[in-house]
Image 1 (cartoon, rainbow, N blue to C red):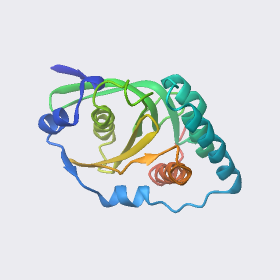
Image 2 (image 1 turned 90 degrees about the vertical axis):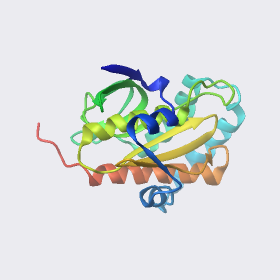
Image 3 (image 1 turned 135 degrees about the vertical axis):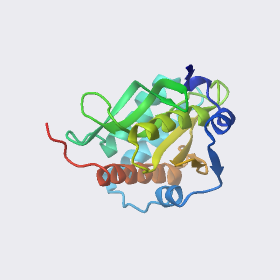
Length: 216
């Protein structure tokens, strides 16, 4: 059986190997990225502070600095830890055999059922430091992780994902063999940064809908 790392995956490879079909838009993605969840004043003030910091540093922050000073605080506002339902994990490996190809790799951020260790992934997030420095196909790497997540879920529900290149965020949905990638959201633009936070809050709502309190 051939083993393929996420880092070696491109959209072209995934489409040809697994029959994935790119769509201009999916209803699930459209509904997700157009979330109108209200942000409280404290959230808005935090977005303003993070937005200023990112704008001043986006051209020289490395991946760890981007994660520590911007992405981490933004995710913390949403709080993806629901102890008996799901949690957020970093740099965890997920893998599975799909159509006689063994896909494996580490995901920068992963939301999955489980508390101490990820079990069934719902969301895969990849981050990159600078436009001119990232290597490989960012969308392909994220989609590969989502494909493994889909194979582990086996419930037919959508798998969500996202990736960053520089300050640009794009969101993704995989449903069956169809996937779609959103328009770009520039996190240095305040209105876009607020919408990114709404999208993350909406993602938590989806995670709550598809899970129940586990029995320990």
